[in-house]
Length: 203
View 1 (tube, helix red, strand yellow):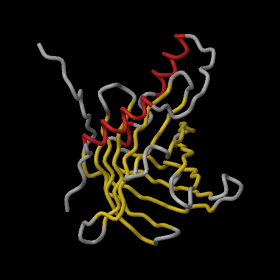
View 2 (spheres, one colour; view 1 turned 120 degrees about the vertical axis):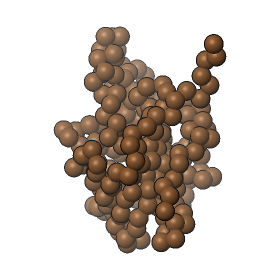
View 3 (cartoon, one colour; view 1 turned 45 degrees about the vertical axis):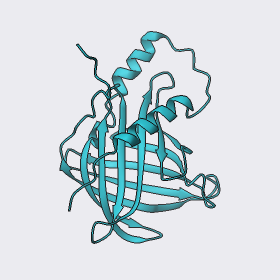
């Protein structure tokens, strides 16, 4: 069973569209250049644990047990990571796939995320912060569907060869939550890697 390779075209489409349409129109806080650099230096590697190739098992409140592959690469521009999440069947057929761009915003001191699914654009946006030894994310999913939802996600028990993931889900804008709507256990099957420049300079 082969694990998925991150699509270069997905990287280009997601990156360019995100630049053209910012996640949120926020006024930058009054931080100095030194403060911004310090934030970048302190937080740029917080998603490095995700780099590489992973095989996972999952338990979904809606679909029951599942499995799949998760691959992440660092882009050439620094604190930006592109990953592909893919749920597969027993014969390796794809049931679901999405691509996510994660970029650290040193001006706002937070990670910003946008996920793309086939045919639904770039509406699934979120933010992330490191809390102790965990990564916490709040993100919207299914924005263009009849049943959009808000998720609170935790990456925890993070180790070089494994990590755990759990997501709580709300369909009423955060008023009520279903805890552990989806749980994931991931095991490493490939080393960290980078995508590199798409158009390297010529000598």
